[in-house]
Image 1 (cartoon, rainbow, N blue to C red):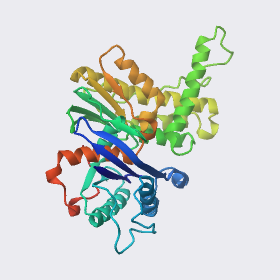
Image 2 (cartoon, rainbow, N blue to C red):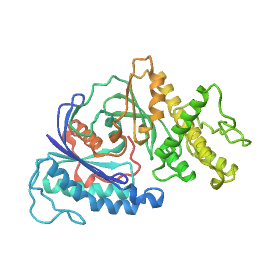
Image 3 (cartoon, rainbow, N blue to C red):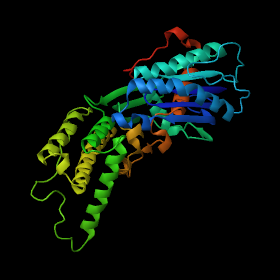
Image 4 (cartoon, one colour):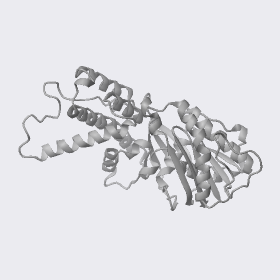
Length: 390
């Protein structure tokens, strides 16, 4: 069968088309088309995603990307024409699509509705089922996907643990059986990705800030390693500004008796540190690198420590780390350390699938379809839910 998937949960407009067969633990996928449009440049002046602009861009780009995908999959003639809003009226040819999957939440509701309305119109005109997909479930299965070509779902050993880390979510999810989820820990305030972006803004770094923080942190990490390895460190080389005291940040909730996280306090600690250093205008590039390094160390340590404790408690056999922050190299290295010597399989998504993408929505959509074939939801029942939970 063929499935078309649509993702518009935030500021990326994405559509994919798959050929797929097999069951929940043996599904085999062939990517026929995969296209997306990033809105990063549009939102840079705002230092973050501006919802009304995101909605406008989704509406504009969805028909364009769909037509591109249909042509890429050799489904010609293309049944749609690209218009500013919606589909062309009148008779259209149905492409060989059997199911449509669309993100229904969580995310920005303005953005989610654009994808859902577009998907409903397609499903109605093509007379095919429409499957709503939980964005976080998409991130979980993203680790098995590829941006092109063929791939299969691996038979992962249970129980599994998924650490989901993004701009909107920080969650530890226990999975004892495929497609059955228990959130055992989550952030009680800011998500880790949100904290990365806000700290980057405090340091005057461009949006999106997470990768910029990581670049500075990695530069400083390498510098300190060189000093450590040097037999004669240079005069005046200190791991903190002379006379200012050591750059040290808290690890909130690190030793709490649960698996929850907190990043609001860590973010505030950076704000006070910058204030105590007489403001951003008086901080040099070296000090920025040191703050970035300490922030990344603190943020990742909390993730790794809680994940390790969950692995021990639930005797985890498979560990999944997914979401936008999963692209962080330091997180990769630290997660690899905690499972070293253990019989635990570690999965990260391919870099192009770490952020929001329609490939993961297609995978999750297919699994939900074959699980609930007799309970396909009515179009009117599908709605955007910004705070949807697993």
